[in-house]
Image (tube, rainbow, N blue to C red):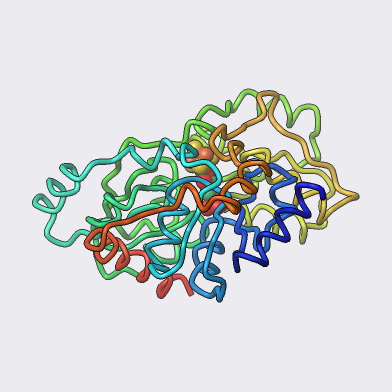
Length: 301
Ligand code: 13P
Ligand code: SF4
């Protein structure tokens, strides 16, 4: 039996379902039942009938799935696959900002630990942040942890006052505007499609800014034939599947998230066989961090 056949067989036997983010390896995307961006996957996680979820992504994704589905078993193929940005804010700063501003909403990018969500008013993803911030009644927005997404949202919602936090995604932050310009010189007709986690200089050069799903949708629906993609290279697989006749280029230093790449077929098989790497969230943490996630699902509809 091949490893893929073994995974399929065990999935049936264990009543399991496999979720994967667009940044994971192509062979892992291939065995997934649902592939998508963070918002899609967190919504799907609330609609599943299977008793076990294998989450091919990073810790905050598995944690959110568990918080929204306390009765299900959530397994991570590699428990060390963590998003560094998820830890780049702190509860002390949240408490300080709450004291300082009477009318403040703490808006927490889903790429964050449950411990940060617990102290937040609402979660957002890159796909719904603008819509949700606009819908909030509060004048002041403390946006954690990502400063780049925060600035992107602030530009779209000028009527609100933003308080920033200095978190960032190492994979997106490192992308260089000069390399995007070079790619643009080589391919002058290509449109630049970027994830809002990119630094401001890269975003300024972009024709479209959106979540991974947004980028894939834009490229698929666009009459244009060539694109420079400024996000993690895992999206390439779906871009080419959807658009076999279009051309996709990257800046010279191709962005790779080392944590997303920790998900392999061997590790998926291992957790299905052994039930190891189960995600656990304490009852009180789950109760408190569930509220901002549920508010996101409600406001993001
Ligand atoms: P999406 O919100 O597009 O899924 O992005 C998640 C992520 O981790 C980006 O680095
Ligand atoms: Fe985190 Fe960046 Fe990796 Fe996304 S790409 S999981 S934000 S480190």
